[in-house]
Amino acid sequence: MFGSVDVIRDLLMIVVTIGMMFYMNWLLALIALSPLPFIALVTWWRGRMMHRMFGRLWTYWSRMSAVVGDAMSGVKVVKAFASEDREIARFSKRNIIYTDKEQEVNRMWVRLQPMVSTIMRLSMLLIWVVGGYFVITNPSDSNSVGTLFAFTFYVGMFFGPINSLANSARMVTRAASSAQRVFEVLDTPPEVYTRTGAVKKDRMEGRVEFRNVGFSYEGAQPALNDVSITIEPGQMIGLCGHSGAGKSTFVNLICRFYDVTDGQILIDGVDVRDYDVQWLRQQIGVVLQEPYLFHGTISENIRYGRPDASDREVIEAARAANAHDFVVGFPDGYDTMVGERGQSLSGGERQRISIARAILHNPRVLILDEATSSLDTETERQIQEAMDRLVTGRTTIAIAHRLSTLQQASRLLVLDKGKIAEEGTHPELLAKPDGVYAKLYNTQMEMNRRIAIK
Image 1 (spheres, helix red, strand yellow):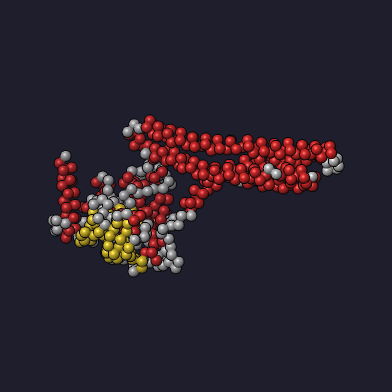
Image 2 (cartoon, rainbow, N blue to C red):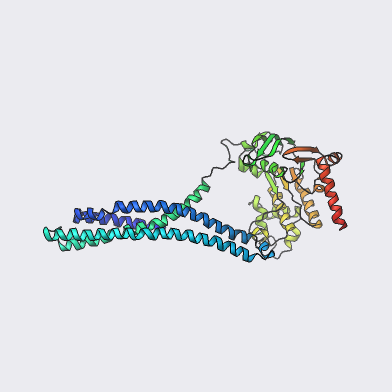
């Protein structure tokens, strides 16, 4: 804002002084303006050089900032391994590199600025020489000593704004290079978008169908390959398999975080790519293994999916999620601040608030991604009770490495290397001793027995 005011002021002063100089003596005015093409050329060339240098400078700045971000986010790990000195050394190294690049920009600026100032002073000296010559050889009203002094005064007023504009080029170039980085992100076309004439329905039933679905991340090895499955409304489907088998990709495609590479995914008979993206995601609820809570109150986090929900609805959702009892135990109750990422709460408390958020959102399709892992037995029992209430009447897709939590599912899908290796109920799959599911289940049971013995 202040920079733009200065530029407007300088431009107005330049226009006024040029008019006065031509009015007083057009020949001296041309001499005064003669350095402008060279100054403009130097300023343009310097601007291009500094634009590239600022672009590189921001890269080194981001690398230095990344070190700080890593250290702040992982401060517990840094302290646990007594690696403070190592992190300081990492930052110092990036800081020195950034400082060197900043000094390169300063040297470029300092090297050319005296050249511009010298040209301006030479122009002033030439005006005195030529003007003095005319005063001596051809005295007149336009070639008098008073006119020459007045003219040099206007020349000083002229070169002041010119020098100011040349100096402001550094600020403008720095701002332009920063804005370019911002607009590169803003102008990146989204890979997932709402098409013209997208479909919105009054209600989603929740029938999910995969038809020969294939997907790969950036053309690498396929994460899913020729997957076909139909999930009826109200069914609970369990997804299991080795790590990297494609379970997370399966649910990400339903949420349309990515679009399929091959085949189709249909919900209620409509390709998900034909739905309005925002409407589609409003019909899907997600409970993650590591629930994310925003900085705010417990009530605000439960309301996140439905900001207009009443206090009574929030409390009912919390009761259904087995969260009400511990919430009212806080001095501020539902107005308790959870802190950044909910760090003031335990893992089980965060998970139950996440479940309450999903219950209040009331989705037609529910995705559970390892929602009960890494919890103690009592907390897992409470969360499992809440989950049982949450899945009732909804199409549910649950991912779990702990296979015992999937025994109540209508069907189990066992993924292996991006394909459906097996499908059936828990007893049906256990009846295949050489199957992938039976081997996974027996391995887990054996590990549990060993842990129990120890």
